[in-house]
Image 1 (cartoon, each protein chain N blue to C red):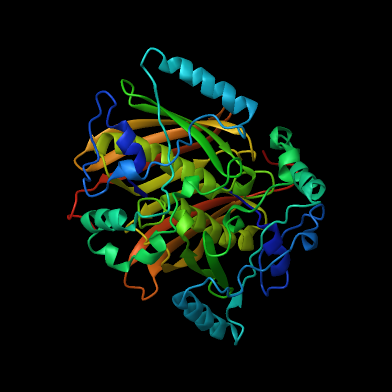
Image 2: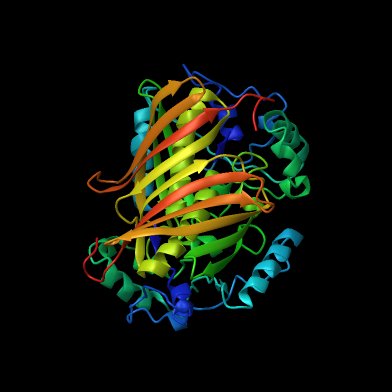
Length: 235
Length: 235
């Protein structure tokens, strides 16, 4: 729902032509980048590696950029996070159990390698488009043999959320409308295509679809509405 | 997306007045019920235990029933699952990596106690209503201090999906439309209220909201559309 993906934003500051940015000086991002999860891993399938290599080739002329994806580390950060939360969510922050924050992990990065969300994102600035390669591991099961709808919704939120972040900085998901067309087999590789649609004031409209690697099967279509947040004015 | 929650259905067969059922004789559910995750756990917060006790009191006159929730175990089940998948998803089943099925876990039950999805569901048959007590652990973080939108979507799917299962047996999520009104603080307890709205042919319409324990804060509103599946006729 809430999308700052702070660690990613830090690495995106250098991208050309971005229309937004993360202005949270109280949130020292450089301290929390522990690991880049977008690099190929031994647990990735052959399909995932092939697609990753194809996308990396597209990056060679600069039209596409590979995003690093990160987890939030778990130590010595509660102070930084507390300041960020206080700035952006002054009311809601009162309800947060700050002691438990020290254990916190980004949802998509909280599984062991190969068991949960394995993904890599690529961004095309000219087309305002993101391609996310996603391999959903065996711990994401819904009905036997297929991904849980919540796991798909998570990757939808993660991907269209990144489109919104690039457009608006710190944003919050206001709506996700997801049409599940076909079940996604567990441990298969799919491609999520996310598009920035339009911006109206603080509202950022996005859309995405999820297709098979050969693009012949449409698994999911979705739209996402995000609201740009401003420090000390929200929630 | 796909909702059979097979292990649950097995335990629900004894409920009074249910309008559907899981007829998968090829899916011997009794073999895969390993643990009831809805019983109070040491990791639950005081708020969660208090609410659980209050709901259990409502169960005393039989108007409410506490659901057991289960994980799929990981051994010696691939044969059973394969038969189920073949019956319900004859085409899609070809794409499933059956070797990896042996590692599979239900998404909502794949975290260690206290780190992920802690929840308990209660059902009122006369009102066609489910109440789900949910405490989202520190591994479900989106923006620092708050639950990831995907984690909320997962519990929405899980809860309205159960309403649909009770109405239609084996069902598949066709649409989730989720309005995120307020961020949900990490490690807080919230209440998900799910309602069966109507049934039109194979379409089952549901809705839900997520509120604070004192019911003063509305965090999320959502609708879910599910399609009843029939063996060897779907996908």
